[in-house]
Length: 300
Image 1: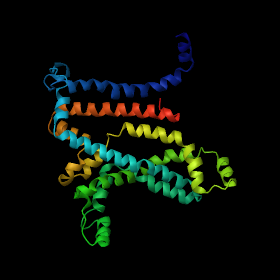
Image 2 (image 1 turned 90 degrees about the vertical axis):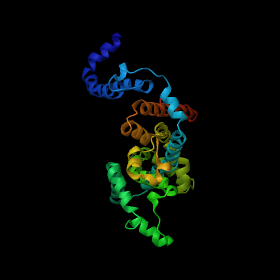
Image 3 (image 1 turned 45 degrees about the vertical axis):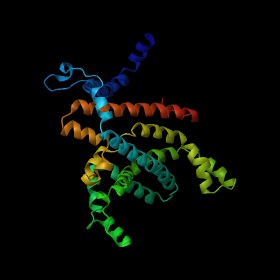
Image 4 (image 1 turned 60 degrees about the vertical axis):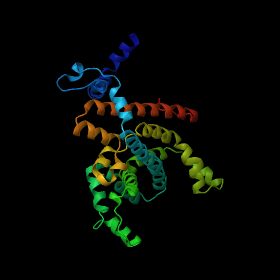
C-alpha cells in the first residue's frame, strides 16, 4: 500500500490523465449494466426498474420457445460466419500484397482509396449499394444483365442477399483492418527475407514460412476480438439494406431486438434477448482465448 502511494505521488499527473477515461467507462459502460434487471422483470414505465415485479427467466423461455428463435439465430450465425470466413482473411491477404508495392505514391493512393469507405456511415454505404444494385438503373445490375441476358435483382432475392451483405461489409472494412496488418508486417526482420532468397525460396514460400508466422500473434489476437462480436452481424447494414422480400434470411438478433423493443415496446423481452447475445459473445471470447493458448498466444 505504501509503495502504491509512493508511485501515486510520483506519477500523480499521469494518474490524473486516467480519470476521464475511467469516468467514461464507469458512467457509460458499467452504470447502464444496472438495466440488465429489466430482463428478469415485468418492466413498466410506471413502476420503473425497482418497482416492476420479478418474473425470473420468463422472457428467456419466451424467446427460446418462440418460432422466431431458430430463424433469427440461424440468420445471425450464418451471416456472421460468412463475414468471418470471407472477411477476416481478406485484409491479411491485401496487406501482404500491398506490402510488396515499392512505388510509395501508388501505395499511398491505394491505401487512401481503400480506407475511405470505413469513414462513411452505413447510411451512405448502404444507399450506394442500393443504387449500384438497382435492377434497371444500377451499374452492377446492368453489367449482370448484359452478361447473363436476364434481369437479376440481388437486393430482393433471398438467394443472393446474404452475399451482398458479406461483400459490402468487406468493401467497407477492408482498408481499416489492413492498417493493423501493415503495421505488423513493417516489424518483420528484412534479414529473414534475404536469407530466404539465398536459400532459393520464391515469394510464395517466403510468405508461408516467414510473413505469416511473423504476424501470427496479431492474427490470433484479431481473431479473438472478431469472434467476440460474432453475433453482431451488422445492425445498421441489415436495417438499411433489407426489405420485406428478404426478411426471412436477413433478420438478425439486433434487428429483432429493435423491432420488439422500440417498435413494439416489449422492453423486458428485448433486454432478455440482448443479454443472451452478450452472454454467448463472452463465452466465445473465453473459449477462443483458451484455444489460442495452445499456440502460445492469448488476449489475457
